Image 1 (cartoon, rainbow, N blue to C red):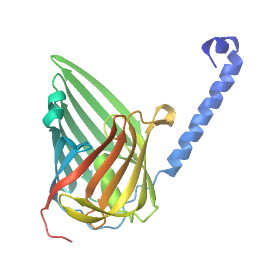
Image 2 (image 1 turned 135 degrees about the horizontal axis):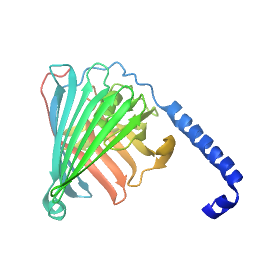
Image 3 (image 1 turned 120 degrees about the vertical axis):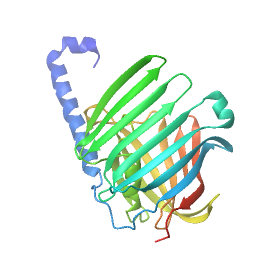
Image 4 (image 1 turned 60 degrees about the horizontal axis):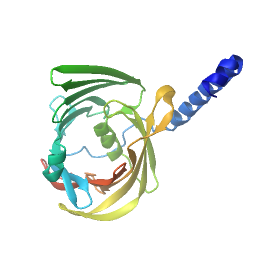
Amino acid sequence: MRPLLLSRLPFCATIAGAMLIAASSCFAADWEASVSPFTPGSFPEPRALTAQYKFGWGSITAATGDVRFGKTPDGRYQLEATGGTTGMARSLWAYDVKHVATSDARTLRPLRVTETEEMESKEFTTDVSFTEEGATSVREERREDKVKSKTRRFAFPNVWSLNSALLYLRTQPLNDDAVQRIVIYPATSAYLATVTVVGRDRISVPTGSYDAIKVDVQLKKIGKKRVLEAHKKFRRATVWLSDDPDRLILRIETQVFIGTVFAELQSVQFQNAKP
């Protein structure tokens, strides 16, 4: 109803509002009930590694990224990723990022994510801390001598960082047609990710040819009152994981508002023997 009609029909507006709230709660309950349990499967411990990826669209490489993953002495998994635009893309948009994520090595629950993004005229720093009750994000924007900060909180018992979500999915059987629904909090918003195993494939990347698990990923933003909303920029992604105990990310093809972009493994080096 438009505001004018609501002003003329306050009783009807009250009833309509109550119905909308009830419907929102119903939708929220539906997706919340579909979220996969926070229970890692039985799988070999991931190996420490260093890897490099390239990012772009078509035949154009627009950015590169370096990844280090390992286990700290205090029993945490830590992923450190650095990257930035390159070549022609950098002449159009200079961008550099550093991302550090830690997770409990026993439960795979996320602990903390820190990310710094640098551009020509501004810098963003995001710090996300996780507990069993949810996530708290503090994001600062620095532009010249001005600093703006915003704190966001998301209460949900089963929320993952991107890295911990990948660690969790790695432990699952990932049989054909299997579906996992997980809530992720990458930086400042929460999303419901529906991960579906499409099947098996054979894929070649610069590090070699692999038997791969082909996975479809769809995202919905979790908005106010827990109502699911369409993602404005992300449509869907296809991910190829190596079909072995390492389950490396071999390639990602993502449909976004500018078309299809990709990430592809360029090199990988493990720091311990193969399990």
